[in-house]
Length: 174
Image (cartoon, rainbow, N blue to C red; front, side):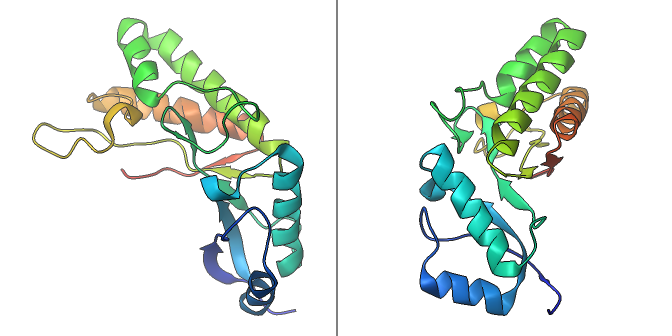
């Protein structure tokens, strides 16, 4: 069997097409990522994840997803609760730093629970943007706050919460 290639691929729908299966078998991506278009019910997600891994012959092939909370949350009820955005954790941190850190850890640990039972092994979290005056507000409430220390502490707590549940964190945006 040939080595996997340094790429992560997604798919078009809730199950793999014959063309996708052939392509993945030929190209052997290192991992996969799921988007909202890939999410149906729990059994369907587990089947899709298993099919992706089967194509590359690696049951440990990483499967990624964006599960932050707030508006960027691929799993929604009934698969997972609606979690708050990072800005809510930052607001709590500004009032009580320990409570904010604990909340970030707990929310990430809950994400890990939700994801791992579906076979998803990596979450594109924490969001490490530090918004600055005059820049685009595209991240908005996804950011933990404008204070670098809030982003550092809550990002670290989120990464630790994911890892404690067996899910790898992927820092993003920075």
